[in-house]
Length: 357
Image (cartoon, rainbow, N blue to C red; front, side, top):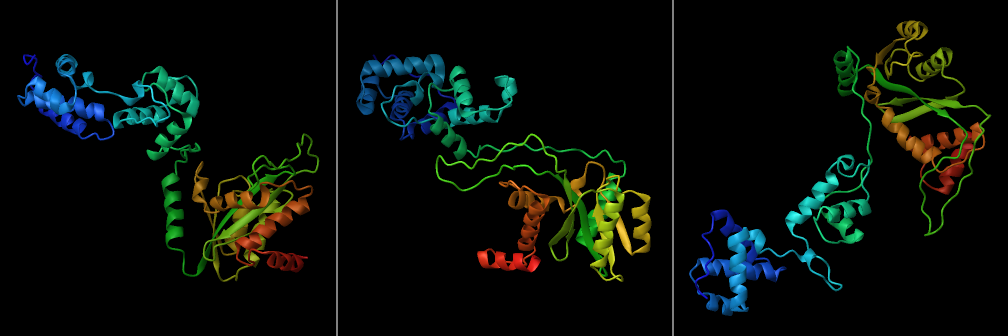
């Protein structure tokens, strides 16, 4: 009986066996590791059986498994056993394999563009990573490892040969504004259709706000011509029927009138055709205005871009405006709050509407 001994341990095997011995949540692995460590320490098998609370035959079987297959031969995985209502416990290596599969491109593994919890579970079971797991447990495991659903985003590399000079000029303008000047970011938002716009809202379970469907829109579109003042952190603008060169030049003149003529306006805008017209350039030279054009495919350098997202969310989403005047009023109401000219509340809103009327 005592002729069966565990083979000589490598330093790595001994370290891993000591870790298995300390697995309080997995007493099977802890007992198997104790058997191997006691056997390599020269303890007789019958004494090992007494210390490990098992039979001598089981001690010999574990030693044979270890000598033939190594640590993998004596490791017990909870998901291979049937449980009755008890939560399944997964070791760190199994969880890492789950996370690795979740972060891998699904097109290469399952031929689809996106994972879902059910598809990920089926893939893990098919690959014998685990035997079974509930969708909620899988979601919690991924969440504990910082794996959550994220929206994908687009990104365009600029192909402008003068990207570096333009980028440096705009960055220098943002970091060190001229002492006797004002930095203005200009852009258009639109086109604005009269259509129901989906959004989010607070509602009870089972209650969903419905909007009509539109197939014919015969009232035309509008454009919101806006500018952002970096010094005051204010967003201004108005709604226009078109955004051609005369309309855009009229908008620039409206901006110029809101500041002293002695103050130079440094305007940042994209390289849209209307902005590059000779009329706009000639007017800027004679009215103390300097133009800074963002590189091609780099409109993100214009700081007004990040303010259009909140405008769309709070003024247009979850709405069904039936006229352009109603839609424009919603935009102006948001700008009044955004520019800190009114507070949130019924009285402040009523006062602002009466003042606008």
